[in-house]
Image (cartoon, rainbow, N blue to C red; front, side, top):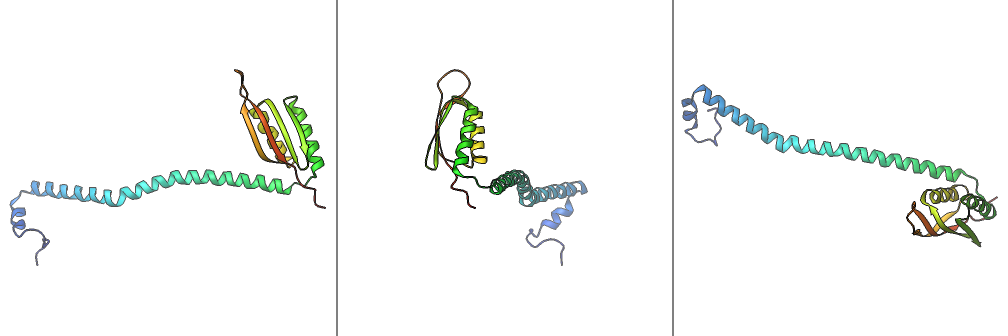
Length: 170
């Protein structure tokens, strides 16, 4: 039995033996490089690309997981707070609104509070809303905000409607 594959032409062993050792080494090297390139393109490169993409996805998922953990901690902290009644929530909202000054006015109607804003900065509005949510336990249900006209720093006009907490359970 011959060591040559059957798919090669029958004259191939004669051609091969007629070549010099240098020619045979060159053809063997070219075949080896071709086989290596084929192995790289079919087996290694796709796995390498997948691994590289996986590293980026892992970092993004890790960041999302950390954000979700922070949100869970915040939600647990809000759940752990004792429930307050609507009267105490109104007092807390009025106190926080007075800290902002004349740029905000509050009105109350049953279990809803409406805050009217005039030229309030975005950071002050965000802090006030965070306080309304965490301390007064009021939920924003509607917001209509427009950018205040002017050339100064960015400020906002509009209103925010908040739902006050229901009566505290004994």
